[in-house]
Image (cartoon, rainbow, N blue to C red; front, top):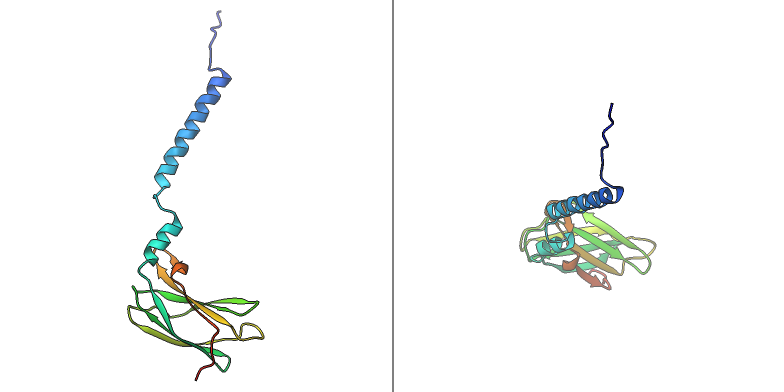
Length: 148
């Protein structure tokens, strides 16, 4: 009985072929999932048409009286950032979607710590596939006055 000698690939050639297969598979997966834009570029694109203006922001009995006008495309909500010298508080206002030229008037609690906030930032929120905060279109007011 005769034993036939079988020859296989050398370990070096097998390693090279395996590496080439992994690189090819990785490039296929990357090109399949790449949309050409990063998430921040997409967010910036949908936020370009958004503009909000603070018409009034003043302090009244430990609350902030706020009036915001949407002068751009429809927005799906507002995020309020209250700041004093040592604390920052984020508040997403419920039921705060606005169409173009609509005004939102709210009174919100102003006590962030023992002191009254010194500034307010308004970030529009848009719904694309998920809720996007348009920080590039933020409106702010420093040194909040007392209401008349």
